[in-house]
Amino acid sequence: MLMLQRRSSKKYHSSLLWTNTCCTHPIKNETILSAAHRCLIEEMGFDCFLEKKFFFTYYKLLNNGLIENELDHVFVGYYDYSPIINTKEVDNWKWITLKELIEDIKIYPESYTIWFKIIMNNYLRKIINY
Image 1: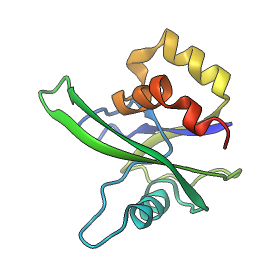
Image 2 (image 1 turned 135 degrees about the vertical axis):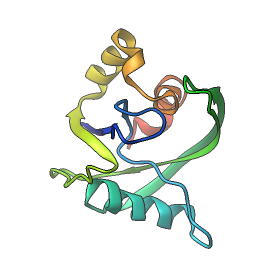
Image 3 (image 1 turned 120 degrees about the vertical axis):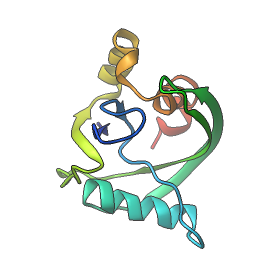
Image 4 (image 1 turned 180 degrees about the vertical axis):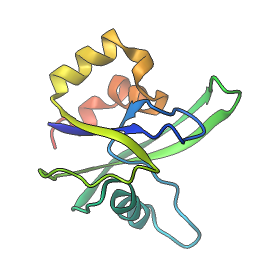
């Protein structure tokens, strides 16, 4: 099972879209791994062991005129309890099987963030064996 979050309606882009468990931007003098742990706690209310799987870049013009020009690092962790979401960051969350997720993205691609669809379409093999 995968834990997804739906981004808060207060987000300035990609609001109310389903995506990976959490996202982060490191602050000055913070490692990527430390930022991932910090945001996992800030957004979802828990922490767990994280393993870096890969990174990728993408460039995309968003609907609101903003441009995403991102370098994304993808970590995978294991956690089997309910999160305590920060409603300033997260609107909702759910557990979903990989099979259900793949099918849902095919049927409702507009319900998912651009970076999450890139991960699912291009890099799934790098995380599937976790």
